[in-house]
Length: 275
Ligand SMILES: Nc1ncnc2c1ncn2[C@@H]1O[C@H](COP(=O)(O)OP(=O)(O)OP(=O)(O)O)[C@@H](O)[C@H]1O
Image (cartoon, rainbow, N blue to C red):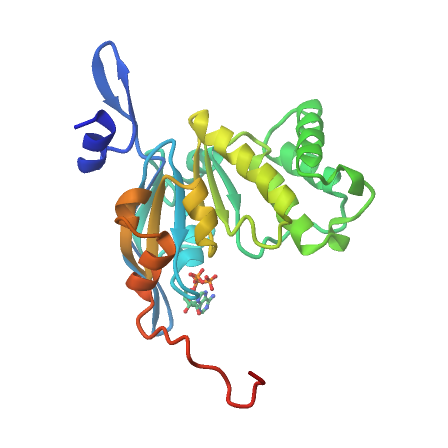
């Protein structure tokens, strides 16, 4: 059995060898028995998830499955009714500041100060994150250049397109050099060239030891990028683990349909719609 295989069997995420001894890294994100209700609805229902350090982790699930609610609680934006969240061993809710300094977050429906240019916004957020002014400015310029936003240097964020807003939100998540990125649908509305640029950047980030957790509805993207995946269904984990384990010899899309697609009927369409 190869080392990789036994690590997977033992659910040991990632490790390195130090002085001949195996040293297991603390999970980047550990969610334990997380719960959230909205009225009668259990949006997240006793959900537990472990994201290994250095993983590229994809969270998938049908609309309304609880992905955004889970990620919002995981990063300290929405208070859970129950359960705990640890980022690199640090409790996000009991002691938020140390955990949040390690986090870079692209939330759903990002609210940005809109009467600023992208550069002004990033420099401002960099200063809030404690970066020295020249560092904040240099990082803002570099990110705007990489994300193809530099040409819009006079455009206010309020006048950005949907994809541009997503990209500046991603830049804001990266600015302070986090070790864990939590990205809610980062490629939604982003053009293909920008998406490839972002994917390459995120791959380099995980290759350098960083961890990415992203949600997506695009199974092909998740399959290309992610080494671990979790399928969320009705607020619970339907399957989670290394990508190949979850796919179980099938495609991710097929596994997704098998796990959550009961009632899938491809013959239905409105009788009045031309066919
Ligand atoms: N603020 C809220 N108030 C009431 N119900 C909510 C609220 N936020 C989420 N919900 C409900 O919680 C459930 C989970 O929603 P959530 O946004 O987490 O799903 P999701 O998996 O991210 O969906 P999608 O893929 O469509 O973005 C849904 O039934 C949703 O209607």
